[in-house]
Image (cartoon, rainbow, N blue to C red; front, side):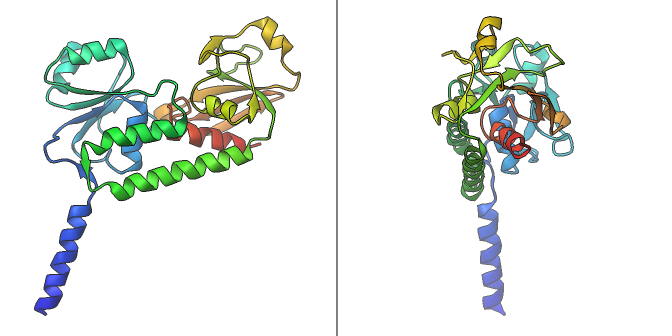
Amino acid sequence: MKIFLSFLFLLVTMNARATCQFRPEIKKVISLSGPMTVLLQEMGLIEQHVVKGISVFSPVSAKTYKGKLYPGGVFLAPSTLEEFSFGLVFFDESRDLKKILKSNKNINAVEIKTRHLLPMDVVDHSMVILKSYVSGCDIELKLVKKRAIGIQRDLLQRVPDGMNVIFFLGEIRGSRLPELVVVNDGIVKLLLQEKKINTYPSELSYINWSPKIMSSMPSKTLLIGLVDSGMKGVKKVETSSNKTNLFYPGSLVPGLTQLEAFHFWLKSL
């Protein structure tokens, strides 16, 4: 009996030690970063009491997260900065926001730099940063990485070789196209590098499209409007002729959810 109880105690102790959680010294976490918030959700950390707030633009279901929502960006009121005091604050790359957060010496502001990174690089970058602040999360991190790799692999296999497609930042409304085209950024950059698609000719990440260049594209070029449905959680593909709108939470967030969004679209073809 004593041997059994000792063994049971050992199992309980091992399970307790293996629990994925923030390190004990971290008492408050706020994530204004899309990729980091997604990672926290995937690992089950977002529901822990230490996570006090996330950005209102996060692709997280309201059913999943019941905590406080912050506007993010440079629209943080002085009272909000006080709420961040003595907390760990993740934020996406922004010179202005960095200056604001760093002005409060009591805030541990951590910048998540994803500009020009491919989706898997974003996942890896977010993980490397998070590892410094958590314990017992090795299994969860490996599972997220494995899922992201699987989605990307299947996604690339589903893209018809030589697809002519242009991705727009926002919803296509009738004959009216959004002003910006996505070219060398995130998953579109990946598809270009893998020579899976032909798209709007530009070296820039985003560019205002030109009627002259648009008219020179092949007649059967697909026009895709990317709409991030955020916390609303809408997932749908609406197609009319050669125009499609892809609604998906996190479709414009670099990394995992953007992979999910494009995978969702490709499965509808």
